[in-house]
Length: 167
Image (cartoon, rainbow, N blue to C red; front, side, top):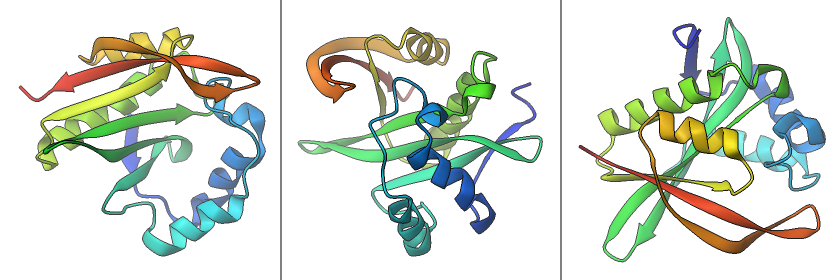
């Protein structure tokens, strides 16, 4: 099924999908929902750069002509080096079938082929075991735990950091 999946730039026709991410608590799921946001902010970003900017980008995950999620990356600067931090989110009806793993694999392949990034990293909430397994399946290694680094749903949450080095 991962062969049918593709990443592409967002289009104006996808704006309703993007609105759903800000207004539907079930769209992003437990580990990605941080409260209601103004969907006009995402629309403004789309109008400014179509979600492909110098410091960050987001791409639609498409399956059989339908947008089922998104992948993203942003630059992270560490001293004189930099890395790219990746992320992914799928709509609930498409989770649990390996599609998120396939989408992230496509993103990693693209970034290693078309950027000079030496390091890719991903952060996930410690309780998000499915995402941790997906990252490990595509070659990321667990590097550590950041204690109580994120606030969600009335509590501080730990994050697990994963890394993948070029080569």
